[in-house]
Structures are given as C-alpha cells and as structure tokens.
Image 1: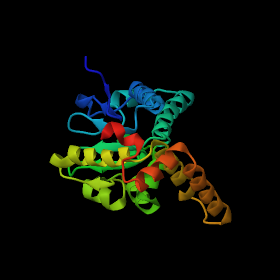
Image 2 (image 1 turned 30 degrees about the vertical axis):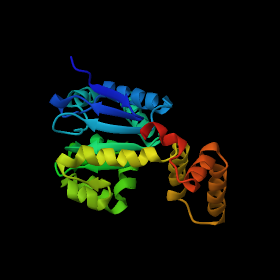
Image 3 (image 1 turned 180 degrees about the vertical axis):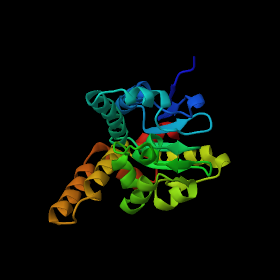
Image 4 (image 1 turned 60 degrees about the vertical axis):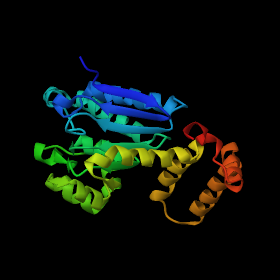
Length: 263
C-alpha cells in the first residue's frame, strides 16, 4: 500500500506530498496527524530551509475525506471539538513555521485544501487549479481555515466565497491574492525551482525573523511603539553572526556562507 504522505528532503528542501490520488488527496484525521508530525520534523531539522506542500494525481487536495465526514456525523460535541482542534493545530503549525512554506497547486483545492494553500507563505498555481469554500452548501462553516483564507484573499472576497460556496478558477484566485503566481502547467516545477533558489539565497535566521515581523506589523497600528519595535528588530539582526556575514559578503562581492552548499 502506498504511503499516504510522501516526505522527501534534499538540498535544503522538504517536500511533503499528499499521496491519496484515488481520493483526490482528501484528508482525514490520520492524514492530519501525519502532516502535523511531518511539519514539526521539518521545523526541527536544521538542514531544511524551505518546505513545499504538493499533491499527486489530478487534485491538490479535495478537503475532507467523505468517510471521515460520515464518522464525524455520529460524533458528540466533545468528539467533534477534539477533531476540529487537530485540524486547527495542523494549520497553525504550518502557518507558524519559521521556514518559508510554498504550496505547489497543480489542481483543485477545495475546502480544507484551500486552507492549506492559504496557510502557506507563497502559493504557485496552474490554470488547472480550482478553489471552492464549499462548507455553506453542507450546512457547515469554514471556521478552522478562516483565519488563513481571510488573510490571503481579504474580508470582502471572503464574504463572497464563504457565503456563496461557488467554485472559482485559478485566474480569480490569483487576482484576489490566494495564489501568489499563476504559471503554465508545464512550467510549474521550473517556476518552483526558481522561487526556491531565491528563498535559499536568504539568511535562514533573517527569513525566520522576517516571518515574525510580518505577523507583528500586518494588523498593527502604525504608532510610536510599533516604530520602536521595528527599529529594535533590525538592530538585533544586524549584530547577529548571520547579519554581519550578510553585510560582509555584500561589501566583498561574494556569496554569503549560508549559500555555500547551493553554489
């Protein structure tokens, strides 16, 4: 039996590939647990610099597995709460990784699959990608994925697509910000490779601090405490070993030490 989640690590890149093509990579509680473990492992592995989320078959991720949904229908409130918290924890783990995360979206990403895309830092998609926040038509709510989806597409578009549960295409996903880039299917891997090279060129500590910076300033009021906080952040990173190496390599017209293995 094929592994439902493929984990491959090489050259600083950890690729987590959803591998249930017969179910359009829909996830259940077991797959959520696998993803959570794999994300924690990638976070802890100092050799990993970038994490890519991908899928096999024709779909990126169709959301919840129907058999899992059937089981959930018979759960008590307490069981449903524990189940939902597992999904929420997986998405939080993905969102709060200190390393850059990239979604490789080659096909449909529905419901929770859209949440996976939104929780990544960057999402590359092809014209074959489609999206649907279908929960309303099932009498449900996209609650656990909502923080990431609303952040990615904005409140106005979330109001539309959460409420209508309509399918929208990759061009629309790109227009509203859910996809970071839209590329031809044949160019998806080369575009991913090019993007990853840019990410690997950044200082590992700097990228982690930049991600933390974005979280801190994105919803903050631009006031004196925020200005002081941003000044503190840049001063702190300038005096780190990595910060000093980055400046020195620039002035000396050479590559920084952290790119040595990619040279």
